[in-house]
Length: 598
Image (cartoon, rainbow, N blue to C red; front, side, top):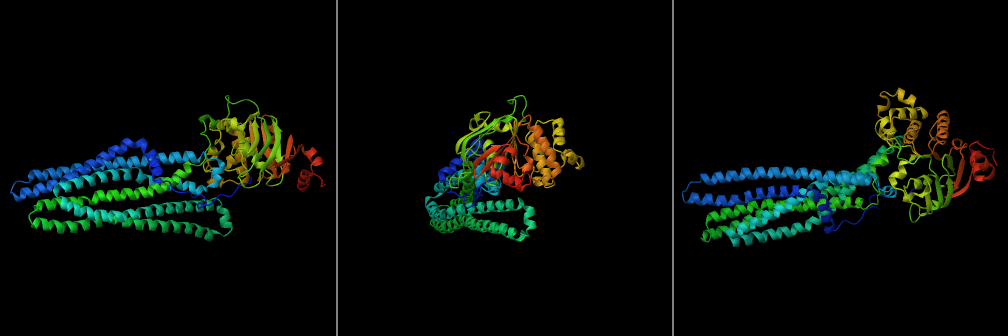
C-alpha cells in the first residue's frame, strides 16, 4: 500500500489553546469530580481560617501578659487551632490527591479510547511515539492543575484577602506599606509566567520526540543491530533527551524565580513594616502587640502568596499539557464499535458468503499526490477465490483498505452485499470480514490470545480445528506451555512463516463471510504454502476469498484474477485466459516460470 510518510512532531505542531479554551477544557476534566474538589477546598479554607486566628490569639496573649492576666486559656485555644487546622488540611489534601488521580485516570481512558478509534489517515500522520507521550507524560501534568491549582488559587486568594482585612483592622498605614511591596514583586512575577508555559510545552514536545525515536528503534530492532546503527540511533534519542533537558531547565529556572518571589516580597515587606511600625510604636500611635500581630500576619501571607504563585505555575504547566491533549481530541475518529462487533460470527450474522463490487472507484491518500485508484470497477460474486495481481504500487492492497473502510473512496462506490460500505455500521461491516495484513502482525501475549484476538468466543474445538488446518498443531506441541506460551514482542519468538500462519488462523477462527488475504503466504516455504493453498481453496467453497499476491503460484487456481496497473483494472479472467490475452500478466507468469515467455 502506498502511504505518505508520517510527519515529524514539528510538522504536527499547532497553536496553543487560548486561556478561555484552556479553562473550558480543564473544567471538562474537573466537572465530574467537582464536589470532591469543593470538599477539599472547604477543608483547605478551614485550615486557612485556623491560621488566620492565630495572630489575633497571639495579640490577646501579649495583652494579657502586659496586664499580668492568666494565659492558660489562650494557649489552649492556640493548641486546638493548630491541631484542628492541621487535621482538616491533611484530610483535604488526601481528598484532592485522590481526585487528581481520578482526573488523570479519566483523561487516560478517554485518550486511549479515542486513539484506538483514530481514522487510519490520522494515525499515519502522527508518530505513534508522540501519541503515547500524550497518554503518559501529558496526562500526568493534569494531576497538579486539575485540583491543586484550582484549590491553591481559591484558598490562596481567600486567605490573602482575609489576611489583608485583618491587617487593615490592625493598622491601615502598615497595610499600605505591605501592599506597595507585594504589588511591585507581583508585577515582576506576572512577566515570568508566560515563559514557564512556553518552556513546559516545548519540554513536553521534546519528551514526545523521545518516545517517537524509541518507538522507531524498537520497531526495527534487528535491523538497527544488523546495520551497526546503535550509536547513531542512540545519538538521535540523546538529542531529543537533550532538548527536553534544555527546555526543562529553562522552565525550572523561571519556576525558581517565581517560587522565590513570595519570600522576597514578605522579607522586603517585613523590613518596611518593621521600620514604619517601629516608628509608630515609638510615637505611641499603636501598641507593641498590634505590631507583633501585624508582623505575624505578614509572615502568614507567605503561604497564600506562595499558593497563588504555585497555582499560576501549575496552570501554565497544565495549559501546555491540555493544549497537546486537545490536539488529539480534535483528530478524526471512527464511530465507537458496538460490543457485539468484536464477537465471532454466529447465528446473528447474515448467512452465506459476501459479494463485493467496485463501481468507478477513485481514491488518493492525500490531496496532492496522484490517485491510487482511478475509476476501478470489478465484481466478485459470493464464494470462490478472486486474486489481485500486478506490479508494486498498482493499488492492490488499497482494495482491501477500502473494503474495510480504513479509508473512504474519493469517488465511486464500494459495495458489500450490494450495500455501500459507508451505509454499513462500521462494527457490523468488519465483523463479517477476516483480514490478514501484509506483514501479518502478531501481538505480545500468548499464542492463544493471538488466535482468539478477533474471535473472543471461540471454543477449544474451534481452535483445534483451525490449528490443524493451518499446520500450527505441530508448533503448539513443541512449545513449552502449548497455547499459553508467550510469543514475544510482535511475535519475536516465532518465525516469519509461523507468524503468517498465526495471522491466517486468527482470521479463519473469526469464521468470516469475506476473507481478505494480503500476501498471506509470502514467507512460507513451498510445503506449507501448498498446504495453505489447499486450505484457502477449501475455505473459498463456503466464503468469499480475496487474495493479493505477487507470487502467482498462490493464485493460478483462482476463479478469477484481477490484473491491476497504475491504479486501474487492466483485465479480469482466469490464469489461462490472462496468459493468452494480457501481455502484462503473461510477463509476470513467465518471470515466475508459470508460463512460456511471450
